[in-house]
Length: 154
Image (tube, rainbow, N blue to C red; front, side):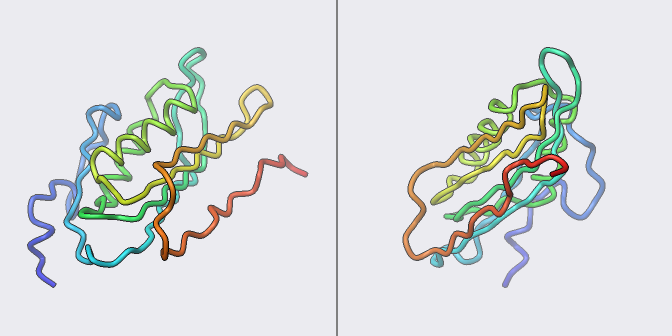
């Protein structure tokens, strides 16, 4: 396979500055080397952080991003930098989770995408947020996200 598909990537293979905000973050993509095959891709970010827009206190989540690519794959280092750009971003759990899903759909135009945001308790209540673009494509094995409901120390 030709390395031509990696031309133009600005973050992979070198140092890249952490973006100041999700809006400034550059999500890079590469052509899907297997566009005629339907397959499943999962990214897990167990230490996602953002800020509460009211108190400014940190919020923590375990994110699971699943997609079935069409013409493009997200470049993983750019995804990592994008997700880390939320560390100083103030937004509610729903806004962060759904916003990440919508941005990935806008950039990649996948056959299908879902994101699960499994947020740790704030005020004693864990919040789980889910976004999905539609019915998963037939014939693609799509496993459960495997994140149990929050149980605390029990």
